[in-house]
Amino acid sequence: MIRSCLLLATLCIAFVSCHSTDTEFKTTIQNADSAVINYYGANDTTLSVTIVRDKKTLDQLTDLITNEAAPNATICGYDGSVHFFKQDSVAADIYFDMNNDSCRYFIYKEDGKAAATVLSSDAKTFLESLKK
Image (tube, rainbow, N blue to C red; front, side, top):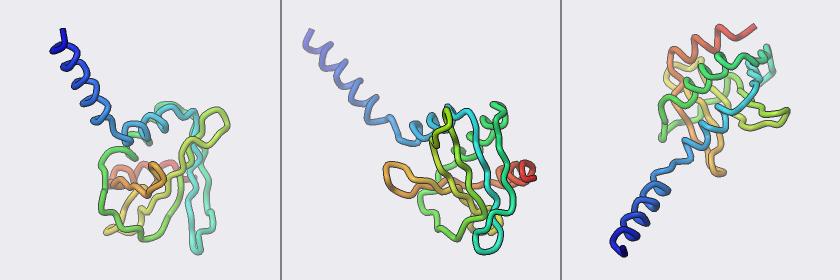
């Protein structure tokens, strides 16, 4: 009986310790019901705004943003931002750099710290296709 309890406790601790905030972040943006994408020009002026409400498009965007972690990302500036919404409240703010081939990232805050994922060629093409 004690052995079973210890095994159960060990499994619970292992499960909780393996739970990453990446999963929490992905869940947050997956649960969004809309997103606003801002495309910046010179001096961070907004050149174009795209509103996304289609669930399939939101899912594609989420998958591209959370695809590959970039723990050693260097912030080189921003070409735009994505703001995910859930019931008219901002769920997550993400900034992106897509025009500098050596510095393409999605950047966001996770637990109060900057985090980043790789902005792939597919993600760049997708963002450009959504631009109006």
